[in-house]
Image (cartoon, rainbow, N blue to C red; front, top):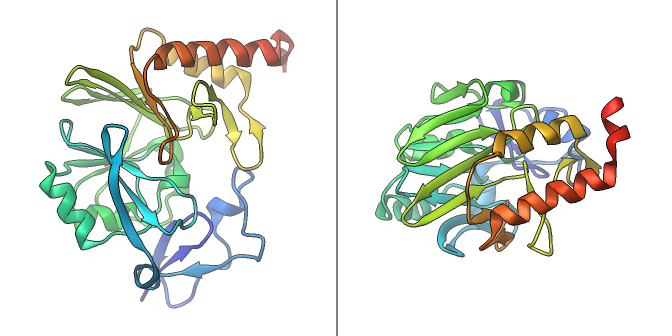
Length: 269
């Protein structure tokens, strides 16, 4: 039986003879159902029309999909930490071979439910590596697997310079990855801190496509979680949407701008 995949968000679901009526991730107010209505595909159908985009993104090796499909995120490979950050909907032998050639993957870490995509398929293709998802977002997992590891709390030290930090606002378990090594300090932000089009700021969004800002109290929590964490560069969710150099200063300025806009009255509700 196929694992039906939502055409709007790219998330694979449990094997079933029939497609689900609706995708729970897309019917949530943070996302949306495609304008033509709920539509489904399968990994086999996707592989017949698309390929993995494999190229460098400002110093990190990325894996995406070409032409674009669903949410156009790309995964990033940190071989020094053994991490594949995020997931895409398409898994090809070429992509798996290239990741292995570049040092391999020991674990997959996902920032939030919009990027779950084919994370289980990726794990299986990489010989059953664990998939780290925050416990607070367990309800959004649409395809179960023995490789899923639900972590708890606000920080998780992965070793080799890599740490997961829970930064709520977008989802209760929204996560960023901080990595320091090789003379660089990076923050892989997903949508927890959404790099803006000027690539000099980040925004803090409950819903990116529906333009709903995150609650101030949760943005304040994210600010506290990142206090004292040094990073030079901030990598956003898709190709080229990155802040290269002075990333810490850009994030600090973005917090200041956000709180200046919402005002103190926002904390009283």
